[in-house]
Image 1: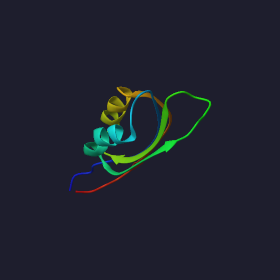
Image 2: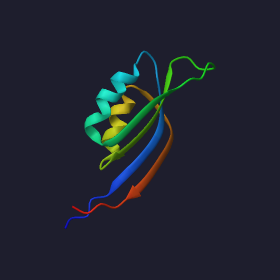
Image 3: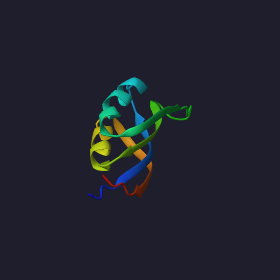
Image 4: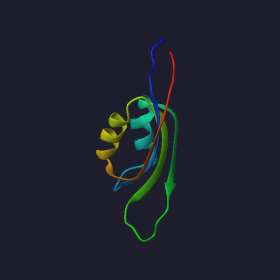
Amino acid sequence: MIFQPVYKLGFILHTYNTTLEAVKNSLAEFGENLEISEVLDPAQKGNNFKIHLNTQDPTLVFDVCSQFGRIRSIKVEEEGRRS
């Protein structure tokens, strides 16, 4: 059996001119249990998306998200998985 760590990611993505659907479609292939919700903040221009995702490669997820905007409030938890 090979040990493959799984990372539970939680973060806020702040974007301009990006839809929830576009972010969701871009992240769908990089993990499981993808949850995205829009967080309304009238004090800021643009959109804030709260994202939760289980992935084996957080770097890829963050690289994709950085193309949309700014990543904030990151929480990463590592879990083990055997395959």
